[in-house]
Length: 114
Image (cartoon, rainbow, N blue to C red; front, side):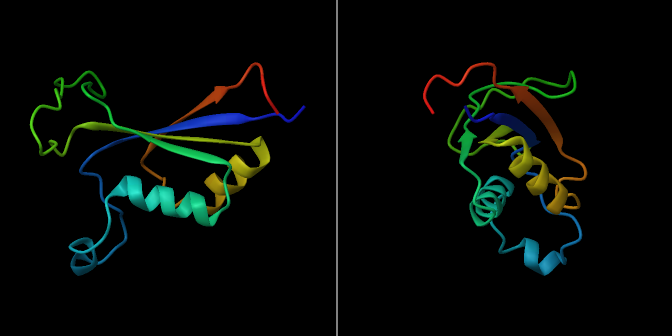
């Protein structure tokens, strides 16, 4: 039976990459899309982007997610599931990219279907 680990990456909708020239930030994809592309390139098993309807970070103001345009502080979640070795390798190889991002590991207790 394979051991799987799930991590959740929490960030704000308006989060941008650091160490990128300003002119490149004007045309780059949003942070969630960049993570998805990096995870796909790393051949990770499963990656999901959750669209949060409402929530808040660090005891700050609640973002309700009303309207067509999301506030730049609106919470976002990316969930990645793979073997612990693959997850650790991915996080280590993207250490600079994730340096100021909240990442939580969720232990998968039971794998119902291999």
